[in-house]
Amino acid sequence: MAFKSEVRDSTINALLDKAAQRSYQQYLAKMTLKKVRGFSDEPISFDFPVTAIIGPNGGGKTTVLGAAGIIHRAIPPRAFFSKSGKYDSGMQDWSIEYEIVDREISPRNSLQRTASFKSLKWNRDALSRQALLFGVSRTVPASERKELLGCTSRKFSVPDARVAPFSPEINSSVSRILGKDVSGFKEMQINANGNVTLLTGQTSTGVGYSEFHFGAGESSIIRMVAAIEAASDNALVLIEEIENGLHPVATIRLVEYLIWAAERKKIQVIFTTHSNEALRPLPSKAVWSATKDKLFQGKLDVASLRAITGQIETASVIFVEDDFAKIWMEAILRQSNRTIIDHFQVHAMSGDGTAVAMNKYHNDNPSITVPSVCVIDGDSRQDASDEKRVYRLPGEAPEAYVFDNCLDIWSVIGGKLSVALLQRFEESEKVLEVCKDVRRTNKDTHLLFSQVGETLGLVPERTVAAAFTTLWAQVNTEVVQGIITKVAQGAEALTPASPV
Image 1 (tube, rainbow, N blue to C red):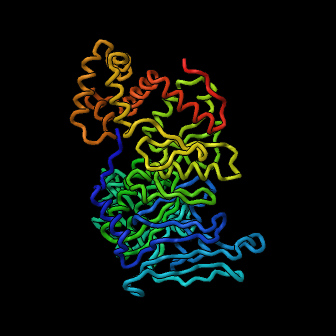
Image 2: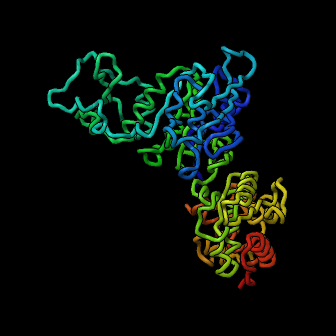
Image 3: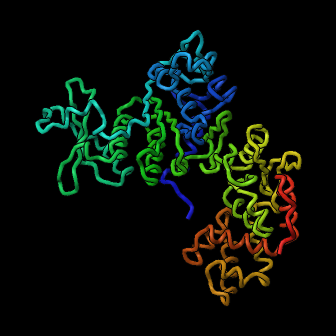
């Protein structure tokens, strides 16, 4: 079943509009990495107040996160870009340019700021904006934190005046993220100035326990939510590896909480991740991919990043627009011989523009020896080009094209398609009526296959899509052969044998 976030579409659209109109007191709108590590003149715009930076290990996620942070006085450059004597000589002349909203300084226009590393030190015209940084060390267990070692003695205790429960807002948010009641949890100030704290919890039966018996993710979420709720409006929040210590559902709920916090408190959040779950509640404009020397905007599967940078085990790659195009393209490839099937990996991007851009970057990068091609949908506004290795699938709206074509040839494929849809062969006429009813009432062709699956009785959308595309490919041999030939030649594969 397709994922449906609990964040309303109206909330997402309102925040997109707010960022576009820059209706903030303080906001980092855009940044250009003029020269930082592997990046050169790479722009990134923050078109949504919660931004995810994804990428392979060493791709530059933390570089982007740090660059966004150091223009704020609260984030020292050494937190991300320390210089270790002669071993970091490459830092000379690093430079980052910023476009920033700060209505106290400039009520109407954006500010231009620069941070640069010259003469062995950082120079920055830093802004006074509250900024919170949650690094990967936030999940270090309490037993490994030096400042808490004094809390492990049998005689340890603190005055009741320094023990306080969390607010209802914090309890509600943490409970939703972790999926457990935390109303009995409290925070203890270990010393008089309150800069060292220890958490306490309570089981459902009322038994108390200290943070030394918390899960790493449990502790980090409570502290993170408490800090965000205590922060001022328009604050900047930076999070490294947001999924650290969390199971997938908790990761989704944390990102949803951050979106709601951005709506309530007008905060801006930037986080890095390797998790697909962290991307699911976000719009496409909120996701950027870092690939060592380039930044791409758009939501895509994290596993696809290895293909973009050439880290794959097949001979070539096919980039397509979305998950349905991936299913369709794989069904087409299965009609060829084994050599062609084993030659390719198919990766879904997030839209035709992203697919075309990824294909161009992949083929233009001299360090990548694995060729790629791009196959766009029939209704794409992008240009097909043999020279650029960009090809087009048949029809207009892809789901509707395959669906309608299969209904037109039902007398040929009806029985087989019924079985592929996990129904009986002899019930093909009943299945046909279900398909016709769905087509008649459908208003969004992207939902055709999920609606058929629901009507037939809990048949997964992917199963339905695979059934339709496979039978379509088996019948439309001439069209399929033409696509395989183009793709194989573009990717420098062997010319495929005729389909069996």
